[in-house]
Amino acid sequence: SYGLTQPPSVSVSPGQTATITCSGDPFPNQYSYWYQQKAGQAPVLVIYQDFERPSGIPERFSGSVSGASVTLTISGVQAEDEADYYCQSADSTGNYWVFGGGTKLTVL
Amino acid sequence: EVQLVESGGGLVQPGGSLRLSCAASGFTFSEYWMHWVRQVPGKGLVWVARVNKDGRFTTYADSVTGRFTISRDNAKNTLYLQMKSLRVEDTAFYYCSRERFSPRDWGVDYWGQGILVTVSS
Image (tube, rainbow over all chains, first blue to last red):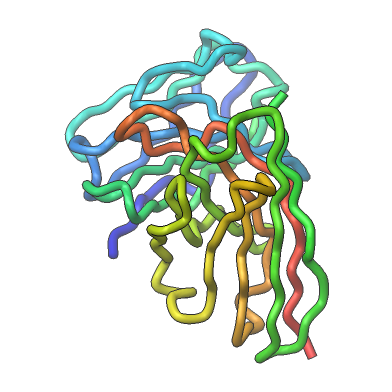
């Protein structure tokens, strides 16, 4: 089995840029996905296939890949972005999925 | 509108069994692979199981292999998770989720609201 590693927490002031990294064996060969989960709610997909944004997700959310790490960047962070963020990927067959441990984004 | 609504959760004793259901609507259920993902309250997301479009192919996380069974009834637009030999550590919110449609696009685009399973004596 394999795991994805994320920092437990990231803190930024409103208007600043937040970066959340995720490292693990699937990368860069397999796609990465990012989910936002606000307290008491189900997760929401914010980035798919490394850097694509689903419709309805603000442009300030972006994704990138560099070697065995992927990054979620939130530019011009707003108070409403405070949430837990999870990266996710799969093995080469797509049969076994894995989530990162999650990063709590605090907007100061 | 895509909707996934879980049911069947509750309190069960260690060693017991429970079956979760997920009623799907707003899309052609039989065209999508489906998953169960769980989350211990206050902890992270953990993938549990995956089933293909016709229900004939399934995969599981190591922690539930041999105890949990994912299945589906496309005529009823319903996904299931049969859980046996439940352990205290299986206590979690269980989310029904839809895999994205495109080939090799292995992420979730829709989630249910989750259902709580509590394993305790």
